[in-house]
Image 1: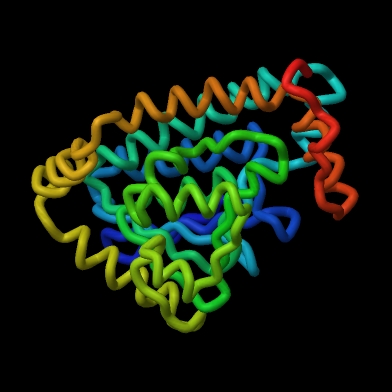
Image 2: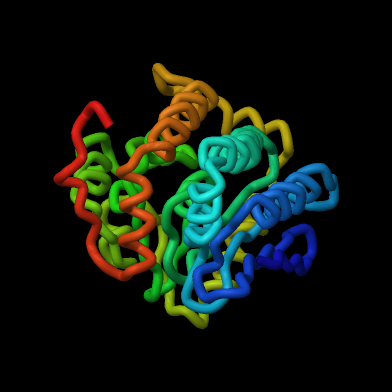
Length: 265
């Protein structure tokens, strides 16, 4: 994956572009995303960031091929810990920093890529946007802050249905349930996202920073606590036979069959 940065005044437009159509991340690409966004948050000349993808995908989360190689090498737990160890601190800072983040969701956002979009301050979607968790079909538990962020946007039960039914929300459904804030034509996506980023980014840093933290504090569980809980559970689930079946099913383009796995396995 490459990460391109363009400037529109005090707004940075960050575009994730994968070598495949999935815009998926492995250890190096998630580190690149993290370093890019952290550098922009360190830059006092940047007040807002628009985060988008290329082609038909915003970000599909972790790369399945990397998962398969790690399973074969017996290092899957270490890989999941490494990925979440980079992604989760980034999400915490995005939620706390005075920099405004606008997700311009151009296509599919799934797995950790969905968490990246949900962690932004607002989400604008094109008609081609699709939201999916994809964790259950892989035999995994969610990460990327999904279990903390999504219920705050759409409600606990709707988030539960989304995860357990392995739903994919099209753009209009995502808007209806509150997972995205605005729906525009694909040609208008970036211009509209940049306008919103500039408008939200113009306020005083203290106002933005304090308000973001105050809004996130309206919960009995801090974001950081939930991220650590997610990290522990997805690492555990990545080392199960169910995850191996989920990866095989994905690669073979079939539905996974978890029916023959017992609790003891």
